[in-house]
Length: 286
Image 1 (cartoon, rainbow, N blue to C red):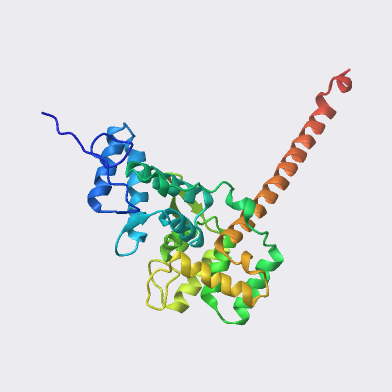
Image 2 (image 1 turned 90 degrees about the horizontal axis):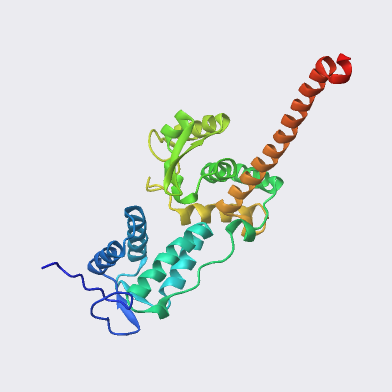
């Protein structure tokens, strides 16, 4: 006789959970949720992604591991505070909403964020960025100086800052996980040279470049708070002092460079055609 999985929520077959105001999330319940996803025919990659998101929620929950009406809203606020991109927050919330439905508590669900992160971020100008660097240098805060410089010159998600290691600076590239795959990010040569000098002065011989006083990799909240404080010191609006605004500056700079390159390529091609026309044009050959 086949073993029949019993699911606790309204979406599934089996015994319903009591409709209380809160549910204690347990490892066993997470296992049941994974089994439910498998039973619904979800592919292995999606199941793994759902499992990771639920485990993230579980780790974030207080010691009692209780989920209620406010849980997903508070989790969303925490994810945004930790500088996760809006699309990433939405993905986690979508999983959280599916979990709430599975548990038979649709009242726990919340709406996902509807706006793209870049659309709501304030515009950090290059002059403001340079002023932040200048301020960090004047205050002799080398670590924050390089945090600011890295996020303004490399498309590095803040949650993957630990991937920026001594070894990566030596190789001039690092590998991150993005969009379900691996991506290689090239590092500017001059930045690598500066980072390696910083590592030598800081006594960092291997591993992540940005460490706490306890020699542990900085968390995203620590990185964001450090940049925000330096932004205030530089007399720049506080809302501009975060890794996402710095990355937006990088993307805008790259977009303007590519646009200029397109113009130069078109101009160069036009010059080739003009030269060919002088020799091979129909009117010239008559």
